[in-house]
Length: 568
Image (tube, rainbow, N blue to C red; front, side):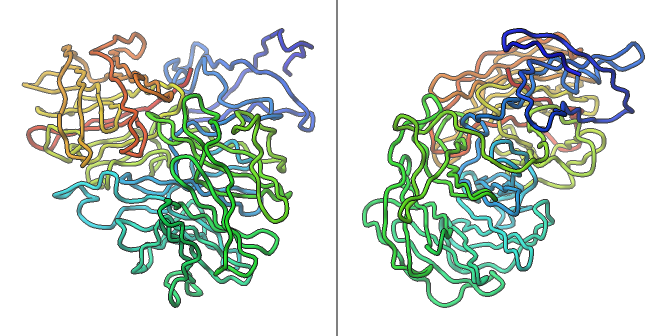
């Protein structure tokens, strides 16, 4: 029982003993008064008795602020402070699913799951591997900023199947399906038409349509199985010299709607009362409204979704570099067949009432500790291009064998990345370096077109921890600098802890810094700060990246025993 203080400004402590076997455990704080609990829980601390391994307990999150808001009367934007652009949100019964762009990262097209549109967990990926040519394997070329742009995800109830469609390299559209959002996902024959910024729609009669295009917006009908095109696409709108793209296709009270974005700051709505092929008329939805993220751009793109109780919401994204493009949510109302976003003082609200949804499950935060157990990586992780699968494994830790001979992290295969949680977070890896070979470089990077890393360099049978800064790419995504070694410190022993802290709040001059430890307790700053690049052209925001490459010959390996991400 948690004691009742009777005041929001008074705090008391409560404690409970937990007995558990070795492993990873989820601890729930549960209200037992039928959902009326409105308490303010400041922190939870885990500590071990004298018979336990206190380091292991610390890894589970000692002294960690609770990462959710215990007051569900309102939510705040962004709903996820992570780079999840070009979003589409759908509902299946009382569960919501979210898809986003991933460009050159693999697996592609992450799927997130939620029960309230506010709290989200990673569920999987619609595209298990980027099987579209050698450049996606960094074989003779690279695919930076290619790959998965705005794609589409929908669910067809009659055959209980999820469909993902996306145009790659402006050439062809690929179709993947699954009967479970967690997969497995199956690739199908391609459609020889680029459905650029596709928006899939499944009508009440199970006919399938896709809206797509840039300025000239088309609607194509798909075959009954959704895997090929039927007939000739119909152009339903021509915006002339105004760029409109990012189609999202849905239906409301018998009318058909296509959402279109005018990047980077406006959203428009096409409406047809005469079927999916039009004709359509257009209205402005939002145009250059103020952002709920300080310093961020105007919310745009994204899509509509409704709850099982009939309430509508618009999930858009905000350009908020160097972190990326962050999802924001707002209620939608309808009048005379047209939608309106509920604004606050003329701008997108930083806070709105929590959606009225049925009682729901707890979701798993992407922040925390991963000890790389099990047989598959958690869905938060994505490789930089397709990995060499024979050069990595999970065995109570992540084993990374050197897969590339290079001095350039941008050319190294099997670099494993995850989005940085904003506004500021710290990543720490614990790494076994006992099997590194001469010439190997392994560590933790803050990764984008301007990068830096802290890692271990093995030379002449000895190890040094080094900080390298100034790694850069040009606008054609060729490496222009492999960086400069700023500081090097000799280390001994078989284990090391490497840490990076990144401030990804919007704007220029944001910093990341690096440190290391030989005991996991005392960390020493190394090198200098990385100034984060906040230009948009790379599209994807900064990520934490774990890497292992060699400058001489393959054969060495490291074992990453844990990765922990914490936020202030």
